[in-house]
Image 1 (tube, one colour):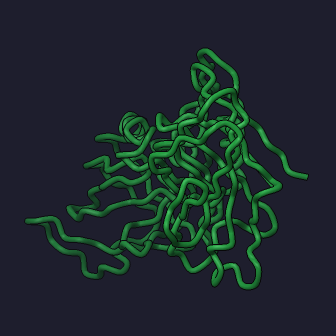
Image 2 (cartoon, one colour):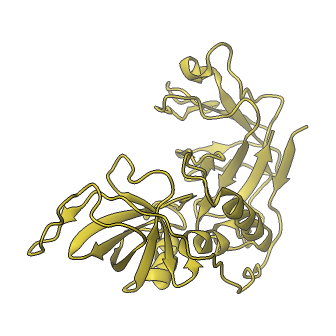
Length: 294
């Protein structure tokens, strides 16, 4: 049975508990890909310039989940494991960047590896600590990051998932409710097709989620963001959904109409998991408008 929750509460939400997230000091041995800082002496090996746990100084905040650090005169970009933040030019992106800045700017941090050393952009994949505070977890607790599993780096997945639930219940950050009712938009399960015929990855056009306007007036979807559990996102174009009207958001590519929009997802797989997933709809300001699970 599907579970649908529509955010309709008004007013100011409370902040999450002030207790920060700390974990015991790990002892993993990181690996790294380095870029030499001008004037600095290069390490003997760029694949493993150190052994054991490593400290670094934070030199720049790139966004909510990425920083730049200096290790022995070598500059590295570090991508936080297990979380995803809104992009800097998207709703709540600046807030996530600022939250990250308050936590780590100009501080010494400890970098701890999981299973993978770097991502496809040669950024270090790390858990980042300030003292005993796990910054990855704190960003989720504050409501400025989503918990996203990136196998095989799953050491703290359970912790991150539980902190996201707490942030949602507290209405923290991007989970805050809008200050006034914005309409009665809802997912229409009778219209949705989360499992397209045949191979989903080869037939994305026939995979879609449907939204129905059951409110008293037209609902403006312009600039809203649709997101799944994994973190794929779709940004609605200019669209006003009439009372009682339905719009399908298809995973594949095609020509948009008033009734059919196209995500044009270019990943190797389809978007919606056949064994269950959750659709989140956010307002242009970043507020959660609805959550639908199946």
